[in-house]
Amino acid sequence: MSNLDRQAALNVCGGRGFVVAEPVRELLSPRRVQLGESTEVRRLLPNLGRRMVGAWAFVDHYGPDDIADEPGMQVPPHPHMGLQTVSWLHEGEVLHRDSTGSLQTIRPRELGLMTSGRAISHSEESPRPHARFLHGAQLWVALPDGHRHVEPHFQHHANLPQVTAPGVTATVILGELDGATSPGTVYSPLVGADLSLSAGAEANLPLEPDFEYAVLSMSGEAHVDGVPLLPGSMLYLGCGRTELPLRAASDAGLMLLGGEPFEEEIVMWWNFVGRTDEEIRQAREDWMTTTRFGEVKGYDGAPLPAPEVPATQLKARGRVR
Image (cartoon, rainbow, N blue to C red; front, side, top):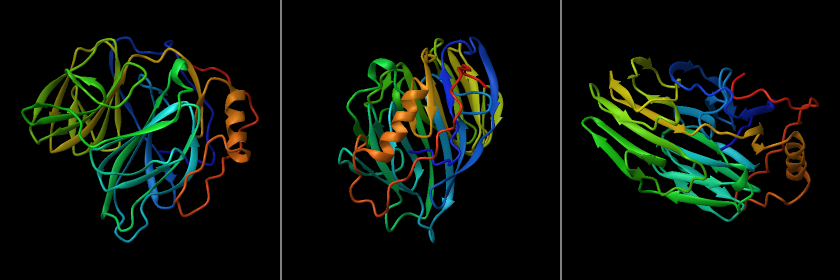
């Protein structure tokens, strides 16, 4: 669950100044980024137009990729702080290792939730041997100030609650949806859900009017509040909704992301979420020179070096560019 961009940009995110208080339909286009040796991802957040949705601060969609004759995902040990990572698969497997000693294979529609807190490091790789196809999403949740220094820990939940309607199944990844609550630990009001729609299905998904929302298309073609979404695109929906109309033009997979607008401004660079330029620079220095982020044992390869931090100081620019 990583940002391997060697030209990592400094971003100031959060705050309520640019929250859209009413329903909107804002289509976000992805940017293509190389992740490790053989996996290309489509990055939806942070985006040229929008940086956060609730506490969700980073969204990558990848696949489906045919990795039958490829190594698949190979992400060396790297650090995180101030955030949670969410691993979510539709196809394939990912082997997670981290500096707390966790070793876990994550399979389709199982939750891999890593809370970095003050400091953690981890690696991700496709097992050997591995399934032919790899398809999933990787996401970050920014931790609020009161919890961003918690002890690092990892959770794996193979069984998650579901909400069903004719032709629609919603698996609750994090938070609560329509009375169903995920066992994953959260630190701010939010929701993440995986939506499976059968061709021709129509439904109205209940929402919280105080939350802002976005929908990521994983597969197939579905219409979200009348807007057709194709895989790899995301529709920002704003706030003020009590329900969301869905219609499937084919069998389709979507991810619903939402939460109360994140009040705090955060600084996000590379794999760190902090509050100041100085804090980010210190974290980068610590990763390169100290044992603050611990050691990932068992990965066959060297840790990932951090890119250089730009010389310019950060300036707050709010939730949108």
